[in-house]
Length: 193
Image (cartoon, rainbow, N blue to C red):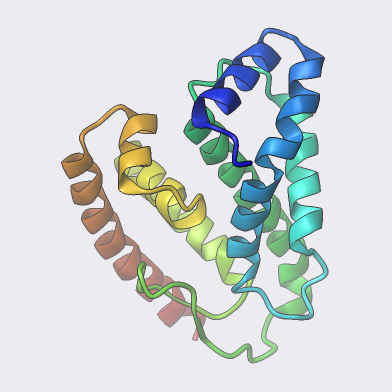
Protein backbone atom coordinates (compact mmCIF):
# COMPACT_ATOMS: atom_id res chain seq x y z
CA UNK A 1 0.00 0.00 0.00
CA UNK A 2 1.32 3.42 -1.04
CA UNK A 3 1.90 5.78 1.91
CA UNK A 4 -0.11 9.00 1.91
CA UNK A 5 1.70 12.35 1.75
CA UNK A 6 0.28 13.15 5.19
CA UNK A 7 1.71 9.93 6.67
CA UNK A 8 5.17 10.82 5.41
CA UNK A 9 4.86 14.44 6.53
CA UNK A 10 3.81 13.35 10.05
CA UNK A 11 6.76 10.96 10.31
CA UNK A 12 9.14 13.67 9.08
CA UNK A 13 7.86 16.09 11.69
CA UNK A 14 8.15 13.47 14.43
CA UNK A 15 11.69 12.68 13.31
CA UNK A 16 12.50 16.41 13.36
CA UNK A 17 11.39 16.45 16.98
CA UNK A 18 13.84 13.67 17.83
CA UNK A 19 11.65 10.57 17.52
CA UNK A 20 14.04 7.87 16.26
CA UNK A 21 11.14 5.42 15.86
CA UNK A 22 9.62 7.81 13.32
CA UNK A 23 12.82 7.61 11.27
CA UNK A 24 12.69 3.79 11.36
CA UNK A 25 9.08 3.89 10.14
CA UNK A 26 9.87 6.55 7.51
CA UNK A 27 12.73 4.81 5.71
CA UNK A 28 10.72 1.96 4.14
CA UNK A 29 8.02 4.41 3.07
CA UNK A 30 10.39 6.76 1.19
CA UNK A 31 13.04 4.31 -0.03
CA UNK A 32 11.36 3.56 -3.37
CA UNK A 33 11.06 7.26 -4.26
CA UNK A 34 14.65 7.96 -3.17
CA UNK A 35 15.82 5.06 -5.33
CA UNK A 36 13.85 6.46 -8.28
CA UNK A 37 15.56 9.84 -7.82
CA UNK A 38 18.95 8.10 -7.65
CA UNK A 39 18.20 6.12 -10.81
CA UNK A 40 17.26 9.35 -12.57
CA UNK A 41 20.64 10.82 -11.65
CA UNK A 42 22.52 7.67 -12.59
CA UNK A 43 20.73 7.13 -15.92
CA UNK A 44 23.15 9.50 -17.64
CA UNK A 45 26.24 7.97 -16.09
CA UNK A 46 28.22 5.34 -17.91
CA UNK A 47 27.96 1.64 -17.10
CA UNK A 48 31.49 1.81 -15.72
CA UNK A 49 30.47 4.34 -13.04
CA UNK A 50 31.50 2.88 -9.70
CA UNK A 51 28.62 4.46 -7.79
CA UNK A 52 25.30 2.65 -8.20
CA UNK A 53 21.79 3.98 -7.37
CA UNK A 54 21.52 1.91 -4.19
CA UNK A 55 24.88 3.19 -2.95
CA UNK A 56 23.82 6.74 -3.81
CA UNK A 57 20.61 6.32 -1.79
CA UNK A 58 22.56 4.86 1.14
CA UNK A 59 25.10 7.70 1.11
CA UNK A 60 22.32 10.29 0.88
CA UNK A 61 20.49 8.60 3.76
CA UNK A 62 23.62 8.75 5.92
CA UNK A 63 24.12 12.43 5.15
CA UNK A 64 20.46 13.21 5.80
CA UNK A 65 20.43 11.36 9.11
CA UNK A 66 23.76 12.77 10.29
CA UNK A 67 23.37 16.33 9.09
CA UNK A 68 19.71 17.15 8.95
CA UNK A 69 17.08 17.08 11.60
CA UNK A 70 15.55 20.40 10.72
CA UNK A 71 11.99 21.41 10.24
CA UNK A 72 10.64 19.39 7.33
CA UNK A 73 7.75 21.24 5.68
CA UNK A 74 6.32 18.15 3.99
CA UNK A 75 7.32 15.12 1.93
CA UNK A 76 8.05 17.26 -1.16
CA UNK A 77 10.50 19.29 0.88
CA UNK A 78 12.16 16.06 2.06
CA UNK A 79 12.47 14.72 -1.50
CA UNK A 80 13.81 18.07 -2.70
CA UNK A 81 16.51 18.10 -0.04
CA UNK A 82 17.27 14.43 -0.76
CA UNK A 83 17.70 15.19 -4.47
CA UNK A 84 20.02 18.05 -3.60
CA UNK A 85 22.09 15.81 -1.34
CA UNK A 86 22.35 13.19 -4.12
CA UNK A 87 23.43 15.83 -6.61
CA UNK A 88 26.17 16.99 -4.24
CA UNK A 89 27.37 13.42 -3.75
CA UNK A 90 27.63 12.91 -7.50
CA UNK A 91 29.33 16.27 -8.02
CA UNK A 92 31.85 15.42 -5.29
CA UNK A 93 32.44 12.04 -6.94
CA UNK A 94 32.82 13.65 -10.38
CA UNK A 95 35.26 16.28 -9.08
CA UNK A 96 37.41 13.61 -7.44
CA UNK A 97 37.51 11.52 -10.63
CA UNK A 98 37.66 14.37 -13.15
CA UNK A 99 41.45 14.65 -13.23
CA UNK A 100 41.77 10.94 -14.02
CA UNK A 101 39.38 11.12 -16.95
CA UNK A 102 40.38 14.49 -18.42
CA UNK A 103 40.87 14.33 -22.14
CA UNK A 104 39.64 10.78 -22.68
CA UNK A 105 37.39 11.70 -25.62
CA UNK A 106 34.05 11.10 -23.97
CA UNK A 107 31.11 10.92 -26.38
CA UNK A 108 28.39 13.61 -25.98
CA UNK A 109 25.10 12.43 -24.47
CA UNK A 110 21.77 14.17 -24.08
CA UNK A 111 21.22 14.62 -20.35
CA UNK A 112 17.52 15.25 -20.71
CA UNK A 113 15.25 16.14 -23.60
CA UNK A 114 13.28 18.39 -21.30
CA UNK A 115 16.25 20.52 -20.27
CA UNK A 116 17.90 20.40 -23.68
CA UNK A 117 21.43 20.64 -22.29
CA UNK A 118 24.08 18.51 -24.00
CA UNK A 119 26.21 16.65 -21.49
CA UNK A 120 29.19 14.46 -22.28
CA UNK A 121 29.68 12.54 -19.05
CA UNK A 122 29.51 12.55 -15.27
CA UNK A 123 32.38 15.01 -15.31
CA UNK A 124 30.01 17.47 -16.98
CA UNK A 125 27.84 17.20 -13.88
CA UNK A 126 30.46 19.51 -12.38
CA UNK A 127 29.75 22.04 -15.16
CA UNK A 128 26.01 21.74 -14.52
CA UNK A 129 26.59 22.21 -10.79
CA UNK A 130 28.74 25.27 -11.45
CA UNK A 131 26.10 26.67 -13.81
CA UNK A 132 23.35 26.10 -11.23
CA UNK A 133 25.47 27.90 -8.63
CA UNK A 134 25.87 30.78 -11.09
CA UNK A 135 22.12 30.85 -11.68
CA UNK A 136 21.56 30.83 -7.92
CA UNK A 137 23.64 34.01 -7.65
CA UNK A 138 21.31 35.67 -10.14
CA UNK A 139 18.08 34.14 -8.86
CA UNK A 140 18.16 31.37 -6.27
CA UNK A 141 14.53 30.41 -6.81
CA UNK A 142 15.10 29.69 -10.50
CA UNK A 143 18.04 27.46 -9.55
CA UNK A 144 15.83 25.66 -7.03
CA UNK A 145 13.15 25.12 -9.68
CA UNK A 146 15.70 23.37 -11.92
CA UNK A 147 16.97 21.26 -9.08
CA UNK A 148 13.52 20.25 -7.91
CA UNK A 149 12.10 19.56 -11.35
CA UNK A 150 15.04 18.15 -13.23
CA UNK A 151 16.95 16.36 -10.51
CA UNK A 152 14.24 15.79 -7.93
CA UNK A 153 11.55 14.81 -10.40
CA UNK A 154 8.93 16.97 -8.69
CA UNK A 155 5.93 18.20 -10.66
CA UNK A 156 5.15 21.87 -11.18
CA UNK A 157 2.41 21.62 -8.53
CA UNK A 158 4.81 20.05 -6.02
CA UNK A 159 7.51 22.65 -6.73
CA UNK A 160 4.96 25.44 -6.25
CA UNK A 161 4.08 23.94 -2.86
CA UNK A 162 7.71 23.55 -1.76
CA UNK A 163 8.70 27.07 -2.85
CA UNK A 164 5.35 28.60 -1.85
CA UNK A 165 4.80 30.29 -5.22
CA UNK A 166 2.19 29.96 -7.95
CA UNK A 167 2.36 27.30 -10.63
CA UNK A 168 2.68 30.04 -13.27
CA UNK A 169 5.74 31.38 -11.44
CA UNK A 170 7.28 27.90 -11.57
CA UNK A 171 6.57 27.72 -15.33
CA UNK A 172 8.18 31.15 -15.90
CA UNK A 173 11.20 30.28 -13.76
CA UNK A 174 11.61 26.96 -15.59
CA UNK A 175 11.54 28.63 -19.04
CA UNK A 176 14.08 31.26 -17.98
CA UNK A 177 16.36 28.73 -16.27
CA UNK A 178 16.38 26.35 -19.25
CA UNK A 179 17.36 29.16 -21.60
CA UNK A 180 20.00 30.50 -19.24
CA UNK A 181 21.51 27.05 -18.60
CA UNK A 182 21.62 26.20 -22.32
CA UNK A 183 23.52 29.43 -22.95
CA UNK A 184 25.92 29.00 -20.03
CA UNK A 185 26.59 25.33 -20.63
CA UNK A 186 27.03 25.98 -24.35
CA UNK A 187 29.83 28.41 -23.46
CA UNK A 188 31.38 25.91 -21.03
CA UNK A 189 31.30 23.04 -23.52
CA UNK A 190 32.69 25.17 -26.37
CA UNK A 191 35.62 26.20 -24.12
CA UNK A 192 36.24 22.53 -23.24
CA UNK A 193 36.18 21.39 -26.88
